[in-house]
Amino acid sequence: MDFTAWLIPDVITSSPALYLAAVVSAVLLTGFSKGGFGGGLGVLATPLMMQVLPANVALAMMLPILIVCDLFTLRHFPGEWDPRSFWRLAGGTVIGIMAGCALLVFFGRPDVNGERWLKFIVGGVSVLFCGLKAWAVWGPKKEAGEGRKPGFAIGTAAGLACGITTMLAHAAGQIVSMYFLSHRLDRRVFVGTTARYYLTFNTLKIPFFFLAGALSDKSYITFHTLKWEVWLIPLCALGVAVGAWLNRKMSGGVFTAIVYGLLAITGVRMLAQAW
Image (cartoon, rainbow, N blue to C red; front, side, top):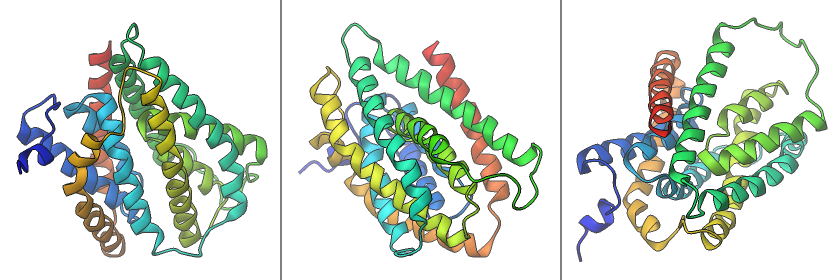
């Protein structure tokens, strides 16, 4: 058996060494973030993968990795979550996932340059999230307890944005965090709620990726994409465990700033490539 075929996809758009560095970094950053270290580090994962793989393959390979990391995270918070805030976000997310699936089908048409559009969207979302992160750090701060908790309408709108961005870029994390933080949840309840949200809707995305592949000329989840990521699964457990350990031992502020700096560079590069 040729194990190289399982390790290095035959569709990579870079050198094998750069591919290995990018995918290992993407998986570990996702694990660190899911483990509670550095808040939102996983936002860089999909843009990194798209630097070394076609956009549709990168999206397909990231989804099982996200689900496995979600499982490892949720086992640490099995009963700690806030059902009310979860369900307020859930309805809009379902609608957003269906809209995102329709966009993937459109991008998969032979007369549409789907690769360009996906890179343009992911690059734009990356730059936008860098701006949101900067605003959260340097923008005006509210006093503790100030402001009302978002109601059903805001939850539905936020969920719609989450559903579309998670289908097209696996990048709903920043919106999800901002929404649940607005509910002023206890730290463990916050992590448990977000972990349950990610696991639920990352799993729900699976049939929609199959549907997008069946209705367009682009394939997403296939035997090959699953084969190429088997060796990455153990890194999910390692990343979550190390993220949880780092969360207890040190501040993730500097590391997060570095990652968002890289995200800004990657996002601008993707926008330039798409343009």
